[in-house]
Length: 615
Image (cartoon, rainbow, N blue to C red; front, side):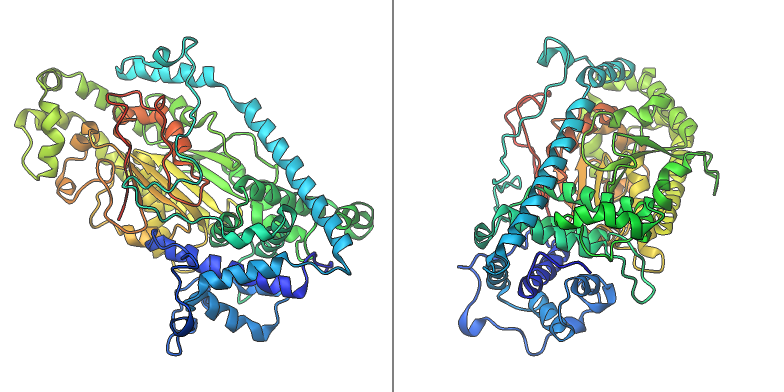
């Protein structure tokens, strides 16, 4: 193993910090308002101690427990002495002085040894330069991939097709969609009610230089993807590890894009090793240059790790572009989108449309949405979805529905549904036109969710953290996937990092939301539209009396409920508005946030604050 850039004491401190971050990340799953206390708030003296009656070993569900296997590879990689492991876990899990410990560990990390400081500094600076160069390349790729005119054309086409007024020319004389400029800064802690609780940079983090911060995070990242297999576990990059690194980067005030740059560096190192048939000879001439610069982690990062991380030596989901026919599904196909395929991305995004009038509606809603994930669109049951939406348009334009719309009756439809009162007989008769197509689509979405779960468990995407985003029936696919992950034997809680559901036709009760939430390591967002009467009428059956996620909050702690009523004109507008909503959600932020702008509010009163509801 190569010489680490950190001393043994600093590796101990870095491992301890990671353990605390890992534990707090799990707390945020169900208690999003639980933050690391300030020094002034935290108890000291007699009130500050580890409990003598409570131990981490008593709670096998904890991520820092041995059962999860999450800390073992980190401690091994960082060469923490075995006898210190239990103490670190207890400090992370049951100590009442977590904030004081975090400050102390950061202070240890800031210290330098005069005897080795010169050589270490050179390697740390080399890593800093490599990260900056990688970030510059990433940013250049994002700029080149933007095509606002193409997005505007698609929005105009969708509006005309769905009968919405064209507002794209009202905001820009050239017809371009304006870029969102947040009026909520990264440091503001607004959750819709003004309550402040977000995780913030730790004061002692200022003691560390930028290059030292990156060194700590780089070595911890390397430990998370190290080629260790224990107790029959799987190699790879666990979603829970990535969420903990995201929180730790927040504490150290390091931009997440720098972490993504380091992920690329780590992956590129693995790719180099995998491509080298003669590792010994080539490694001396090529890899040693990287080692000397301090950019390669430990020798535990092998070619075998890359296969595990990226899926079938890079083929992964791209290798499944052929249509899959299984369990009454006629179509289930992954299509690449974005720029970052086979470019060393250690995280995957799967994007799922649930509204389709044409084939292009599976892909175009996600075009020009720029993040740094290796992204795939899931195309599923296109014929059934297109038939369903054609039926919905026929229903909306029917004489009965038109009369109700013109008479303003739809304004009270949702309130009637939520009050569990019967709907007008004429409206029920009109909506019978689409009942059969809707029932088929719902059934297929449930089966697609089950198949997606099976593929994730199989590692087709590589053992990399997955972000799932879907609107309408695509959101239902995702929830069913999470439920199947929860029901399937094995530890499947490390597969999915983040989830965003938009306009989800999913009942709030009797759908095992809590089990689904446990399958998502990081943020779980439910975006709803209180005036989505189309969704309400279509899903009006008995489940309506139990609530519907697409039109109201999900009353479960750990789920961010975002009221996007002012941004979404109707159910079909998710086709062109989803990208903008995702930008404003700032999904890469560890904290829950919805960034708002005046330009991003095209509807009605633009002075009203969009609500983020935490339960």
